[in-house]
Amino acid sequence: MSVDVQSPRRPGPPRPAAGPGRSRSRLVRRLDFLPYGLVAPLAIFIIGLALVPAGITLVEAFFKIQPLNPPDHFNGIDNFVALFNDPAVVASMGNTALYVIIGVLLSTALGILFAVTLQKPFRGRSVLVAILILPWALPGVVEGIVWSGIWDSNNGLLNSVLSSLHLIDHYQVFLGQNQFVTILAIELVQVWQITPLSALLVLASLQNIPGELYEAASLDGATGFNMFRRITLPLARPGIAIAMVQAVIATLNVFDQPFVLNGAAATGSSVTMQTYFISFQNLDFGQGYALSLLITLATLIVSLGVVRLVYRPVEF
Image (tube, rainbow, N blue to C red; front, side):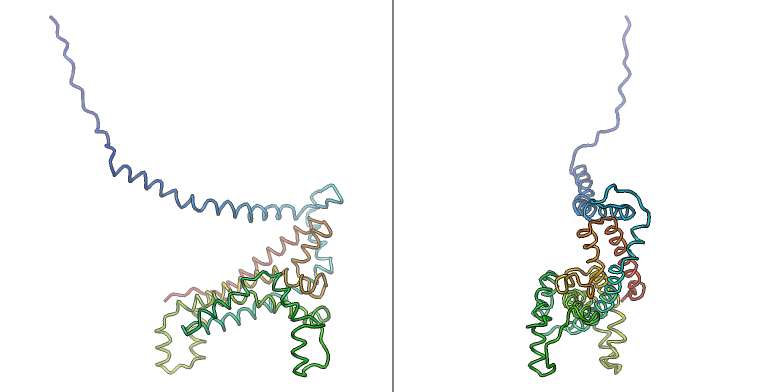
């Protein structure tokens, strides 16, 4: 009789038991994807609202796009040549340069002044900060309407005050006659709007400066001006640089204030206003795209120049 002898089955590797360790690893994997899921809607929004239009502008700036004069076709740099040969566009570039110079210098200087004033706690500080933020929260169109009552040549507040103080013998025209006065008056309105943000950015940098530095300088006999020049300004340079960059961006793209206060007059027209006139009044979208591209490049170049000139890393 034959007997079948079966070899014993070798035990395989033990199966991992489902336990708290395995569920924890799954949870970790899910959490790894959580930041990407939270950022994804914002990334999609930025791509759709900023990057896609920027790409379209970069391409269409080299095409002739005139709905009333078809067909559209590639025309190289003809749009840019036409812009630089347009007296209105060239004049608006000069106006915008004045807007940038006046706006950046004034808003930065006032922002530093307000930030230094608010640096140390005092009674009513929170109320002053709330009042300071109000102009920044108002839309530019609203500010233009409010200030039109101040600059008005017939019954404006400024003319009334100056006349009451016998500083002028007749009402003055602040907008539309003299180019520099017009630009200065308009830019003061924008400075009123962007200074609060500059002050808050500089104030944030000042809050990071250790108080021991001021105490040591005071013990060494340093005056307030010397402490401001030797401690405050150097250590606040990151905040000042950011404040100047946001002022550059705002002034290079100024539209609301000159349009509301001065209309389409050439004495105060900005490059952004010319983009609007060329695109939506002349219906020349190709030149409008080209001018928008020039504004973007100018904003990038000037902002990088400000950062290189002003920004310095600070380590405590």
